[in-house]
Image (tube, rainbow, N blue to C red):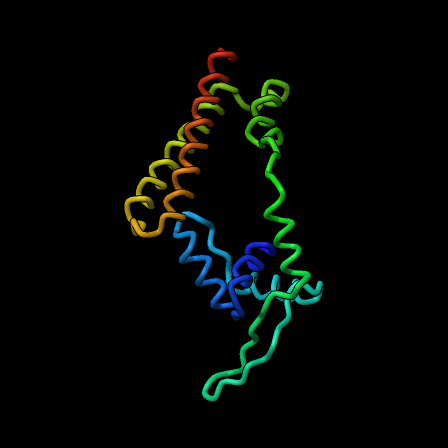
Length: 168
């Protein structure tokens, strides 16, 4: 969340609720929406670490609001983030640990676990398909997010098939 907020502030000053709305508009309903409290806590931490500066702005008929802007250090942190690659493989998979440990416990059947997980993935794919249909065609980022999630799910379903073939 820290770097996501920095990226939104790179285009100009904003207050917390604006940033929440910007994230929701950009990513659509498929992305887990942060609550505004989480955003303000994160903004406070970013301010303490010197990556953003906040300024209180008076409002006549409402409480004051705090508008944040990126500092030079924040801009450098953002540049460094964009330079990093994401190469962490999914070897710490909770489902795989259940699958690997089930025979040792005698409490769960591996094939039953696979079937249950498959049903979950298929339900998730159906829900994502509904979200894609409901999402505005103009929001290409949200559609790419949904498509990526569905491709990952398809790969997971293929992997479940492979596990079942190996374990039967």
